[in-house]
Length: 182
Image (cartoon, rainbow, N blue to C red):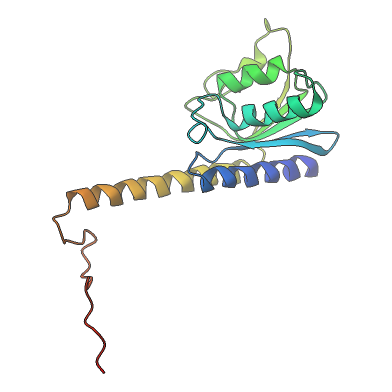
């Protein structure tokens, strides 16, 4: 892993935090060209009501607009999670020079985990692929996010199942504290 790869992935991790802050699955991406940031993106399918608004696609749309071209052959994309099939094909269609990802995605990863679209010899463009850059940090963001989500789900479920006036945590809480003595 080069220092440039680590620096770019840290920008992508910052973007993942932005996704978390708005309630999206924390995946972030950054597009670089000659060591310069061209565009960033983070997951937005929920907030934008758009199933294609993955971090990679958001960044790709911004970069294409800024560079006035749908082909980005001098660009490199850094993303915190292995691209899915949709994103992998969009990145290859845009002719990215290189795609670098952090954590593997054993459920929908299309860069080697479930399938490897980047290695298909019949496709007309081949993008260099590097995985595992800051993988532990990228994976931890996702693990922490889903642990928080599961805890919130359990808390909401406990509240729905509690009797009126009952505190589901098992702790006694004084709902109407007495007025201070004067």
